[in-house]
Length: 136
View 1: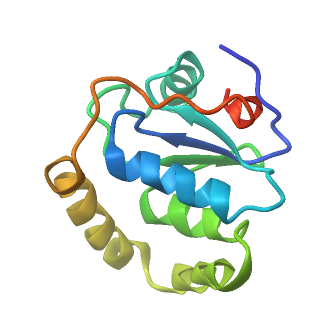
View 2 (view 1 turned 90 degrees about the vertical axis):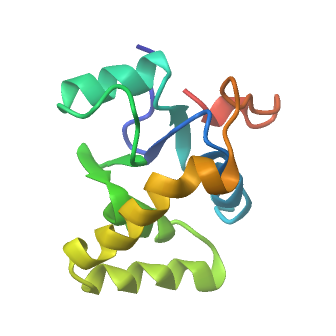
């Protein structure tokens, strides 16, 4: 497993999902501090973290946020991630006030349909050389 800086958030995403890749692009664009690290769920790092925490290592249905040695999934991961965004998007964090069973109904609906709606790639997205240092 490649080491990552555990003082910075690490976002694990489905590397073949077009929606997930667009989400990574959005995070890069709206995180001017550039403190969020990324790894595909399919990567060696992603698989090791999933196994260590008893999460599915195939048939992915969630993003995973590793922050302060804690694991967050589904809508909680997405909303906690928003705290690191610039401007208005930072305030999405307030939606954590909505109970997670309600938030996750919406999350699961989108997750279940994401390949059909947004498509999927044959292989994981590769970052540009400038962004490569943020990927583990």
